[in-house]
Every structure is written in structure tokens, then in C-alpha cells.
Length: 497
Image (cartoon, rainbow, N blue to C red; front, side, top):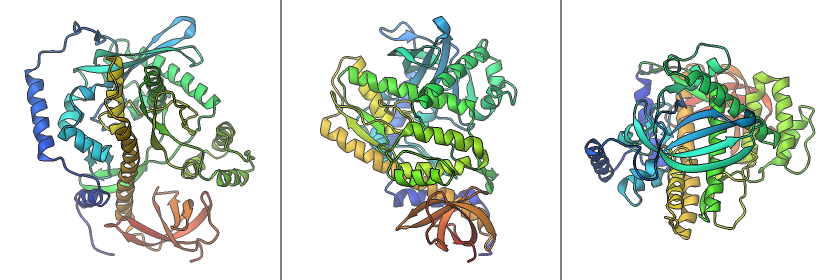
């Protein structure tokens, strides 16, 4: 196809809206939801300033809270802070935006959030779960703004062992909005302290405390078998409205810090609800779907895994594989993730035993830390507030079971939208390179077809010929034979075709 394309962003935005509808998701808010947003905004302008003197709500605004998120994030769900404890221990606090205080059950805003269940982040635009007037303003923990939040407080021993925990409401203030890449560079001694952090007294030292706590939490989890995975996350690079490239988003210490804190906070939340005899939505990854293929994949690299699924043995293999071939480790990680199978939401009722999360090596795990972006987190927050107030569950058993199933299905639909837009963006980049050959790795193999990912650029497509006897994790050489920007199709032939 030799047609010269312009305004790539507009093309991808149009495709994104179409694909949202095809997947049963809503790209736009109803008028009723927008009316509720206007009412919430009007109420906020007339409300008195938040005060730390309200009954039962602590005033923690003076702590050196900061947010750490993507460079372009505007929906800020959590803040973090740390302090030293006895015997080299640490206390960490995670503040979670109190979205439930504004978004009430059985409203038009709630209905839209429940339908989509998540914000959808595509290559060209974001479809927020809640209107931006809420998610990036009234219910976002924005810099310099006083906000009501739920605090997950955790006291840790020096080795990361949880000693005690608590959950309570408080007022907080974000003193610095920090970004993963610049903060990660500083934590890894590759760059200067971000100016936003340097301008806040004591924040640099606090971030170092947070990093120490995160490293201890990570070491403890991985010692129990949490999987050390690193996937490639392509990010579109635009020059104005024209797509120029897809770049890998690498992991760093700042991303790890937030991941480790959120995993710990989600575990505390799950156990708190159980202790209060409250049902909860759990996020689980059950026994790996294709453990036998994981065993075979390890064998091709000279490693032996047990016949039965064993997360600790798999983690040891992954550590060795990263050390042996760091350049190809993201591709191995992607293969393992595909073979583990997708996560899902299930309900744990009082007195039941949690299924657990195989990849994280944790038994108690929910989603609670991103209520602006994920509906299960908002549901969990409502459960949490009911428990804190001594009330019964705000959701009936049958409704909660149906909700868990719906959240799993809608999240899968959202991921398919995001993946299809990644492919449409990639097709825009590759449509002038038909006939070129690339190094690739097999990322999917089933009766439905065989899929491969190029090593560079990080693009995934279907193998339409030359795929006999291939399986996930195999390396091969491919030739680009077709692209379809509208459908997000990228077709390859195997080596020799």
C-alpha cells in the first residue's frame, strides 16, 4: 500500500473508538453521567475546605507524600511515604484516593464504570473509567491539593517481613508529582534527583527509605517464589500528530518500588476484609495452564524444572536465564506469561480459603490501589469503608459473583482493544517495509494460529506460513508480507518462505 498517510493520531483515535464498540465497551459517557459530574464539580466548589479536625479522620498532610507514576499520568490514585523504625525496620504508608466518597453506587457514573470496569489506554487516546473531571481532578491526588484518602499502614522488619498493619481514613497532600523514568534514574545513580523532589525538604531521604523498604519486600517475595519477569511494553512516540516510532518501556527501581508497595498494600487489604468477615474480590492466577511447555522451554536452555508446578523452581530458572542472556530475557518472560495463563477475579467469602496468585507467590491478593482506573478497586474500597464503619457488605453475594465474572471478561476485552491499537500503530510504522526480514520469537501457538513478536521494533503479528512444529518461545526469522492498519493485522512468513 503506497498511500501517504497523515495525521496518524486521528486515524488511530477513529480506530480505537470503533474497536471499543466492537468489544462491547463504551467510548463515551452518557448524558446522565456527565450531569452527575457537573453536580459533583458544583458541590466541590461550594464545599468548605477539608479539615483535619473531623471525627475519626487523621491529618497526615504534613508528611512528605509524593506520587510516582508514568511521565504523562494525570489520574493519581496513590501516594507513598516511609519512616524509620526500630532495629532497622521501616513503616510505610500508602494513601489511596477515596473515590467511593464521590462516586456512589447505582448512579450513572457508577454504571459506566461497572460496564467498562477499567480505563483503556490505547496508542492514540485514553478512555477513562471515570470522567477526567473526576479521575484527573476531584478524585485524583493532585500536587498541592488536600484530599481524603484511605491509608494502608505497614510496619516491616529489616528483611521486609510484615510485623503489623492498619487501615484508616486520613487527609493527605501530594507534595511532589514524580515520574518513573527520572526517579528511577536517580535511584539507580544514572541521573540527578528530579527537581520536584529536590524542592521538598526531606523528600530525597524519604525516597531512599522507600526504596530500601521496596527492595526488602521484593527480596522476601522472590525468596518465596514470586516470578522475576520483565516484558517489553512498546510506547508510541508521536511528533505532533504523526507516529514516529515504538519504544520499549524498561523497568526501573521506581517502577519496582510502586509495584512492591502496591502488592503489599493489596495483601493487607485482602486480609483486613477477611478479618472483618467481609467478602472480597480476589485477583488470582491459578495453576499454570501449560506447565509442561514451561518445563520444555527451560530444558532448551539447559535447565530442569519439576513435573509439578513450582513457582520457586521457576523463579530460580528465571534468575539464571536473565544473568545468561539479559537481552532476550523480556522475550522469555513474555513466553512464560503466555504459558501461565491470564489472571481472573474471584470472590472469597468469609471463612473460605484464598486461591492465591501463582506469579506473585502470595496467597492473599486483591486489587485496591487504583480506584480511579479499575472498578474492582472501587468495589474493594466500598467493602473496606463498610468494614471500617462496622457495616455489612454493600454487595449481595450473587451480585458480587456476577461482578467478578464480568470484571474478568471486561478486562480481557479492554486488553484486546489496547493490543489491537498497538498493532494498528505498528502497522502504520511497518506498511512501507513489506518484504523485509526480521528476527522474531513465537509468542502464541494454538489451533487458532501462531503469533510472533519481532525483536526490533517490538511488534507482534501472525505467522501465516512456515509455522509447522513451532511453539511458544521458539526463535525464528520472518518476512513481513502484509499489514492492515484498520484491523491491526500484521502478517509474516517463516524463514525460507
